[in-house]
Length: 422
Ligand SMILES: Cc1ncc(COP(=O)(O)O)c(C=O)c1O
Image (tube, rainbow, N blue to C red; front, side, top):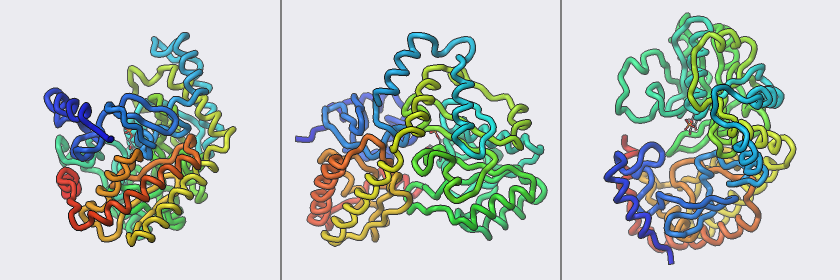
């Protein structure tokens, strides 16, 4: 029988010593009460919460789990590297190997710099775009997330208008809106940030329109500004290259994170020769940015990305999940909107403005051992098997039946409602 008494006890303790009980994407406002907050194990495609409940995990740590938690090849290089050198007075030679490996795999890239979080990489992209020609204005798609720094964090707390003074916002996938935003920047355009596809929370995902992407490239060139693709979330889940390589558009800079070390803390900014001098001119660093263990993990992850069929496998798994859910929804009289690439599934219900159906569905699936999100895109990993999909579909089939029965009494999550309205 599913129980969460230990989780509840930990939440109470956390509320005393951690502001709000938890923060950021792990905040209790985004994790409704009966979703587990604390976990004690992660292996392959499964996570176990503090009460001992095991789940097939469709969040993958919000992305980093690409090849399976604790992948044996990566675990081996991590423990071998730990016996030699990790964080020390200078980097190990692995930093050069890793930069060469990334430049070898990502077509637009001539150089690489490494850091820890995706937000480090996007911040560097912002600074390099401004350093490139000493211009200030940066174009961002409305609601696109690039990290929790003051220039982009989705909540207003602690942010002043000056932090956002030189940003211009446009509608994703709309070449005319992009053109208008470029006009507004005038001769002060430093850069255009592009998400590889629209993957905002609480909204349908949309793949990039090729004309929009080509317009972004052309406008950046015409105005001698830099084009940035933020591949922190989608990197290596669409291609073994920058995600926009799939539509034939090459950025000047691309930001990477999450999957890069398959869970080891490492992110990267890649750039072309055009951006090299600007990259040389900025001062960015961090005490842990040169640590060797995550670099060893990243080199092994890249090897597996190059040498295995992980992407084809994840695509098949994602398709099987999408088709199975569609069939179950139709059979139980629900209309789902499953959008975006199958390797990053987003599942929203029609006629569900307060997310009560989505939340009710995910809660019912969660109590049957499948961890999904009612409002955020999810992630497929390469350790998932056909059997995992069959197990998932058993749980989701029962979850659809559950919400069909209880539909009239489903309540929106009070906590989520506060976030959606914010
Ligand atoms: C597209 C995108 N960019 C940047 C970030 C920030 O990455 P991090 O949380 O590692 O700082 C994220 C995180 O979710 C992201 O999805």
